[in-house]
Length: 219
Image: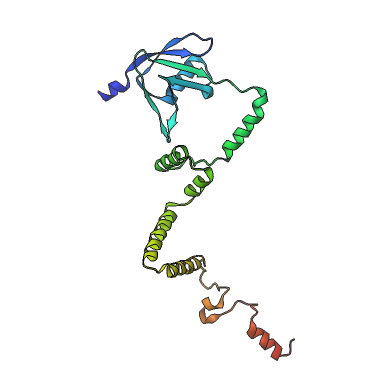
């Protein structure tokens, strides 16, 4: 029964803004907006990139929050079709500047997961987050976000028990040791205190070497 409903065809009226006369078009009762746009553009030989569709006073968009928009149509519905005019030559410079601005805006990778896309559109379109902040949010991996949130929770607990200075000191030491890196087997550290038997790198100059050279008369 559901498949029959999906394949049900309806007849709609296209009211085209401009010299073209109105016409009728048979389409599925439930159809994605971008598919409807492609169908109208092919049927009326219109440029799809400049095509605008209005149904019952509402502009139809191909997608919202990263999901394809689906429109429900009934027999006799009127759809207003408009073609956005091309800008005149004097606006070419402004158009290029707008294109440059679009290129500078933060965009998600095509391989981004669906939930990240929904979150991105929510933050950008609904909450109006700036591109710089969006770049920071989506450039950090979920693992790092978990570490950051855990740190803030522990910081609030440390503040409550009045051990915040110790917590900050421990955080500093933790960052230092975390960023020391990993040495290969047999590789010496530049700091002798981290080496076995306090071995130093060849050519290391310290007070002991200077004292030995002075006693040997090399200065």
